Image 1: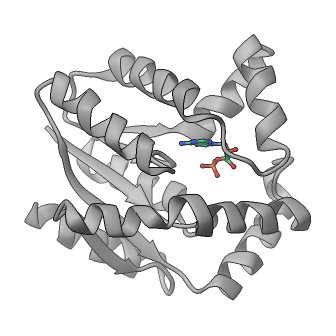
Image 2 (image 1 turned 120 degrees about the vertical axis):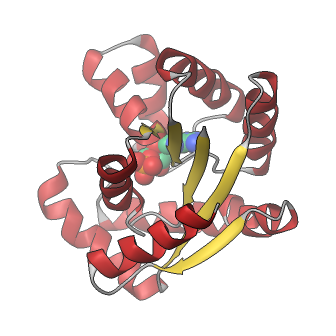
Length: 189
Ligand code: AMP
């Protein structure tokens, strides 16, 4: 079983690349953003709570997010492998993922970091906002999400480096090239 974390700033292409990897390797895909948007659509209590954070570009509290992740994982697995997309976003989440997987006798095989310059992220997200229908793809919320990424999520790069799991890949240029670089890392794990 190969558990992978696809990592990067908002707009770095995690979702797009995850779809390509799922098609190639048959992994399950857990996008915590998609899970939360699904709950919002259903109008559940969890969805209402999530919406109050998402609309402000803030992160959902770790304790809640960790429970959601474990429930989502257990509904999908055991399986060939999982791509975690949008989780972890904080160091406590990374620690929780590590222990959750250890309890299930598995572990993260690698963290794949998509590197994209900041000005490109902004441009991609603004463009995405024209068609995504996502309430958080507007300029003000995008800026907030990028700041939250810098402050709370970026420290995970050093955390995964220390774990010996970090693999950085150029996250711009042709989609196929980015995908090929990711596949090369995955095949080496
Ligand atoms: P995403 O689709 O990954 O860009 O996530 C959209 C929004 O969902 C984020 O801006 C957060 O408000 C929330 N979210 C998604 N994943 C997490 C997470 N792991 N921890 C906290 N909040 C999250």
